[in-house]
Image (cartoon, rainbow, N blue to C red; front, side, top):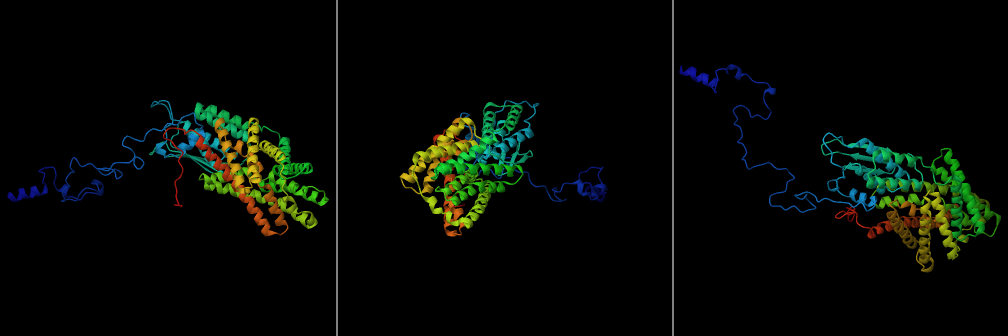
Length: 541
């Protein structure tokens, strides 16, 4: 009796008569959790009520959180950007902020049943606007600012645009738990049309300040794409001739030299159009455009006429040197877009190589046919003709503005900007005796300063006020001397001249960028507590 009760109590410790031998069978793995203690092991004691687990990112007890290192206990103060400032400054300020500190887009109160913003259409519009800006030669920083401004205006707060020379990418993540949406677009063709560039800037300004709907923005964008160039092709050909003729006057030529340089540049322009129509790359277009001015100068030297034939070739080079791409490449490098800067500078190298090939082919033939007539020393005679040179510099800038397809109301302003730059350069280099490289950098800095202030006053791009104004400062004569010495196998002299030309080109690019950055000292900060942050890196690390 006692033994039976002891056995039954062992088999059924809970005293449940329904549980018996079946409970003693081993159960499958699915019948219990992997974290259940084995049979016979007691359960752990429950944690005390005052012991609560905390995040590994929580501050230890007694540590006071400073503002920059940790999020304040009541959140990050709201940053408000005034809409009176240009959208370029406001968007650059926001791009340099951490994502969590950016102001939230101003959107009306949305009810639960209302759908969210049409993300694919907004990203498509953003990429199309960025494509037009990048194809027009705008710097990578301004392209990113425009793309971010469009996306932010339509309610996409967590948006990140990226620009790498010919590839545009924009990514949007609604929240930390949602999948991001990414779209990209490749710029296949690029052209120079500052009229279209200004129209795109006005569109971005209206989107960010006036709240255009998507349909209105798409309609405006379609009108911009359909717009024809403001000047016909024959006017551009005449402008290229005027530019080359004015450049020849700038380096000491006369009326005959002016006519010869203009004729050579116009013939080269027509050959470049023909090569473009046949689908040849830009390299061969530059080769074709560089040969007629060089041939015109060699022909004048062969006739023995007492004219400065080297000024004809120099004037033709002024019309071909890719100053716009050079300034944009150096600007991208100085603002931290190193991949885009390297690609643009490589493009400049290829274009200059095309000019070198075209000119060297003609000069090599001229040197071997009548080598005694081509004397680079004859072109080094410097004539101080301040009135003629100022007028020639302004004519050069005027023609350059037409070639860039600028709006008509900007041509006069950029012409005055270029004239002031040449006066400053002449005063420093000729009157004060300063070295040409720092004199060029100072004059280019004034061009960048005035161009940036004018662009902020008119809420548009700075390129129409800057690119043509640096035309008189381009190193055309130094490039010609280098090529002529290479053709005569005088390598040491040629390398010295090409080094001087490269130094002048870099002085122009750095001066323009420095002047643009100096203009920020005269501009109002976009919003209280919001500054244009830059990367802080000291001694290379």
